Length: 83
Image (cartoon, rainbow, N blue to C red; front, side):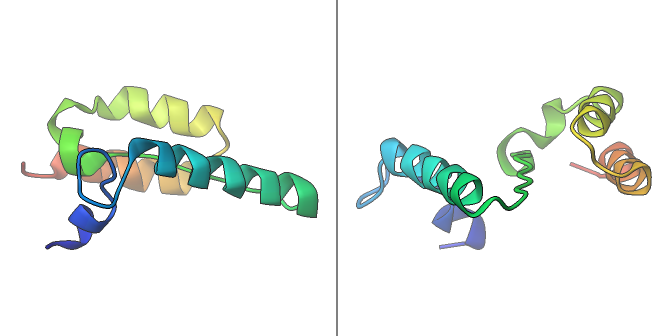
């Protein structure tokens, strides 16, 4: 079992898609209750890396507040990655 397999929920014994939704909701609730800033970035590059449009991903990342330098690094990685 690889590291990416441990993050998969739907269709695996002992894992349910609803568990993932619950974990996400609990994460948000804790952030709200503790009045702490929470940043989540869900980039499922393990399963759809060949369909990500680097320029579009960069614009979306900037919209949600990702720093410019990190956005450039991420975009460059997506453009230069060999799938």
